Amino acid sequence: MLLNKATTLERVNQWSEMLSAPWNEEQRSQLADQLIMLANVIEPHLVADIPLATSQIQAYVLARMVAHLEDWLVRAASYQRRALGMYTGSQLVPANDSRLGLISATEEEVEALPGIGAELTDNIRRYLAKHPIRELEDLQIIHGIGAERIEQLRETSYLDKPIAACVSPSMWAFVMTPDIQHALALLESSDIMFVFGDPRALKQRLNTAMTSVFSRFSAFIAFVTDRARLAVSDAAGSLGSDALQWLNRHQLRLNFLQETEATSGTLLINDAYVDEAVQTIEAA
Image (cartoon, rainbow, N blue to C red; front, side, top):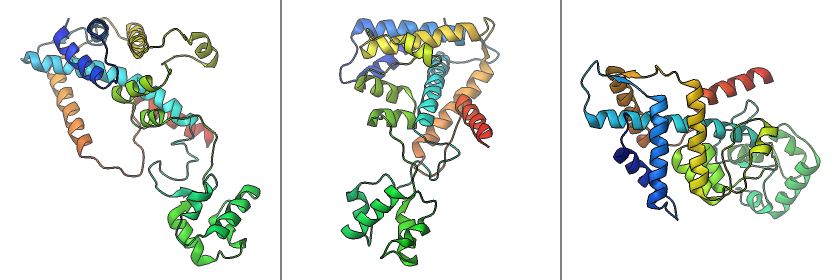
């Protein structure tokens, strides 16, 4: 067993502190045991071709285990992004673009745009509701909108493709950043749970008796462990030198993330990238 209980409990305690109703001691101990079991499946051997300190081994195996959990969260978030019409080939603007989507905008939102008054707001919203248009220039048919006003609108708004969707702030935060922290916030604010399968399987596997954050998170860990047992070879493992290199890259990535700022564009990794590429090809 490479991952010890003390190291695992420390991470579980950090997760527990994020909750408004933290897990009790018995629950934290149970989750730690589950995580150790998962770590044993995905990283059962570490060949010491170079000497590693105990702290390095613990940091490596813990990080690999958490990354394995979050790989599944990335898959779930990728599906939800598609359901919300985000990051598809038909998307017109980056997700962090601050411009206003005119077609779905409320009266107050349109009226707040520079140079747009109440009367013009009403005319724009009525016209967009009745006429499907493809370019902002098509709004010039409305009295009071000329080339100069179109350029103003281009800087502050765009023609969106609105959908009716069920979404919450915690769900939005999770699909944008699918990590353990945001997953726990989503679990705590809703009755959502992680289910694997096609639509018929999803319906059959929904278990309304699993209401607590603990039970749903525990079930998620059990699911990931079960899939890992099927997919990971008993001979799996790492060389100490490879482990150290992976750990250094992982820490470098964390350091970069702390220094990043919001920008346009999307980074897709692992299965999320594959799913998006396949969809783009099929839609071509």
